[in-house]
Image (cartoon, rainbow, N blue to C red; front, side):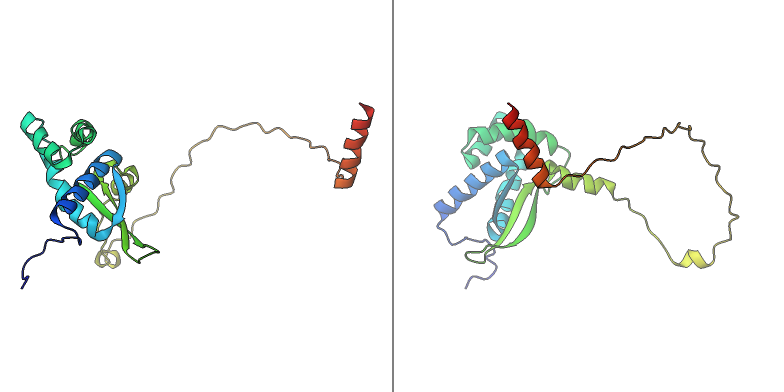
Length: 187
């Protein structure tokens, strides 16, 4: 019985699975966003978040441990140079999974997995929302407020100039062709 064994083997042997997760983690760090299946993304999240967390400590020992997982020098340099600076104050949750629908060939559920601090579109929408609570209780018992007309701001007046438009003579395409042919014959 496989009770309480939650680890997803992804239909692969251990060495194949470790190589796949290592390559996907390096691609995620280099490109900041990759497209994959939901199950692989969930397995990758478990694999890459401790690596990103270790990158906060810029010591030789932690660099060597991260390299043993990633096996890619460029990914390790990118992780320690740019990613570690952006996630330094974040306590966890460095990745986000965005589901996209199913793949046409085999109907596998597809998604994007991305680094949270590198998606500018999502960061803009998060900052715009303001937490406000509205209650319907207070609206009926509130005191009437005397309406005061706000003073209109004076806007600078701009002088308007009248523009006279001359009517344009409309020509048919046949007349245009004949004019072009006449110009060619004159040359």
